[in-house]
Image (cartoon, rainbow, N blue to C red):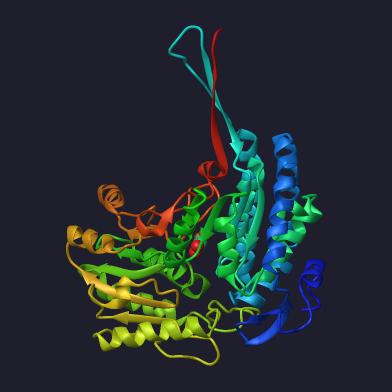
Length: 475
Ligand code: SIN
């Protein structure tokens, strides 16, 4: 790792010891660095520092905050190759995807540098002549975040960008699997002129211990979490005691639907992008495929052909499109879903096998039915279960038959069908003839047990602002 030009990693890492957290390269299963586990007493002291720093930051004009975010964006773009390399080494995704994530992550800084200048209030027509009424929007205070390993940079900047633009301070606990990307990204913020106490990265062996502090500490006014529905449920309960504002970007179980009138080649392209991005380890990945009778054979044949062209390997090697799974637990879980589906009657149409190390072959399963466990679970792996269907209405019911409601996708050539189906899908996001929907300009978020709150877009900054109503009387 020493050719990676990043002072941050030297500052953030430590020698091997019992207290240190080991960071592994999932492609080689070698330890690439150790980082210190910050004691909980120190984390509490850092929250106090963050609180003090926030007061000064809030008092600055939005344009000043914006300028720092813009410089941070520029530095991320200038250092994109280094950041991407760090990400691939600790997370496993192919280098080109890591670079894509660095750009995607940086885009939230650029976007919210602008949105921070537009946190308008309102003048309200008063119901009495001797009164005037208005609202202003103010930062919530210290914002905390717990971020996942699957997008080690973008899930930080998608929260830190709006928080800092709004005038909050930000304290983040990145996943223990991917802390290096977090430290490197934060280092660029400091180089851009952001005071260290406004952006604090904390790691500890126990994510639960940090979660407990974030949820229970009265000086933390907002918690934003990206991760599983199971953990999200727990955090929301814990935040109840301090009536903390929360936003939750939780699990998904995205249906990917191909109608008889779809352009099949386009649907296959979308399916590959949506299913196999990050080896299937994203909350918005297509999780189950519904293909209508009339195009079923054609889609499955073309889909398998495209899957066969994916190249599995170390993400630093040229041409690799599928990296390893993040750890042994993830691999075991994905292989378990495959064997369970086969026991319940599914057929392995392609792949299905465990490869060396933490790799799993990209897999297509056919003869899948709605009742199978694999259809009801968030897979988080490179496995595509395909279900055949006949009628639109029956399809909508099946697509909505899940506790989740994050992303959904469908392909059709009919405008009428596009509107009817999109309106009936119980999801926060719908890709219509499109397999990749994430962008900083659109609101990302779910319904049902996929969570609440929106990230990115003009809505993203609202999560970090309180509305204050001011009533002027006796005029
Ligand atoms: C996620 O999987 O949580 C984020 C995916 C994205 O932003 O596209």
